[in-house]
Amino acid sequence: MSTAVSTSTTGGSGERTAVAARARKVVKAFGTGDTRVVALDEVDVDIERGQFTAIMGPSGSGKSTLMHCLAGLDTVTSGQIWLDETEITTLKDKKLTRLRRDRVGFIFQAFNLIPTLDALENITLPMAIAGRKPDREWLDRIVATVGLADRLHHRPAQLSGGQQQRVAVARALASRPEIIFGDEPTGNLDSRAGAEVLGFLRQSVDELGRTIVMVTHDPIAASYADRVLFLADGRIVDEMADPTTDKVIERMRTLSVEDTSRTEAAGSEQ
Ligand SMILES: Nc1ncnc2c1ncn2[C@@H]1O[C@H](COP(=O)(O)OP(=O)(O)OP(=O)(O)O)[C@@H](O)[C@H]1O
Image (cartoon, rainbow, N blue to C red; front, side, top):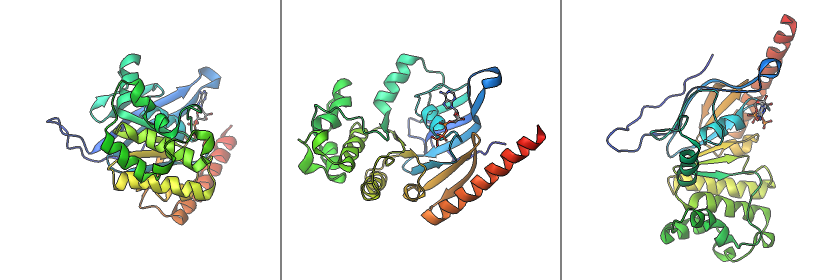
């Protein structure tokens, strides 16, 4: 079974669609024969523009694979993915690289900052590489939003983990990407620094109109989102609007019970 989670689009006439990313019947398999693993099994999903979406699910359910495919970091076995109105599943490497550079932002668990550059240079580096000038006003807004104004000339080693991740958030926002993907962005942070970074992600959606998709194991992190997608066995099995930590914990608990009973049923069939 696959669950279609759809929203209407307003595209056409050069207008932005209400959907920032869209997947249809996406299958991603790794390996062949006996070692074949189907990580995504006919996934249909719409990621709404201007929303904060969290992806949750048990370990191995396909969360990272879904994010990598939506972001054009990995190819699909079959199915289609669009970013806005561009189908990325048919793009050749060069065009895909350019699209990722120009239209997508990334925040990873590891901050991936360049140690010899200061915070401001790290924030503007991707744009410098792309030969683009940062929009000063936008940059100032981002720096103010993530609270880095007095740290801009510090190198990563002179910043706390939370501050380093804020630099990474500012770097992801700097080029005004259409969509930002985060893979466990608070996974390396203590709860206070994690809460700060999640607060900034929330603000970038509410105040800067960004679109964020975040993979997380943490129900508290998921509670900052507008909507949570739940994956199990490579399929979207549920979604939740306006999540709270307790509601997410409860849903994850029932998912792992369902997971165990599925595994037991599969075992007894053999
Ligand atoms: N490069 C790969 N080669 C082979 N199998 C892979 C590869 N990447 C992922 N898989 C398999 O695909 C399935 C989904 O993996 P994925 O990493 O997307 O899950 P996840 O939900 O993000 O897991 P976790 O929460 O543990 O990070 C798993 O069974 C995994 O072992």
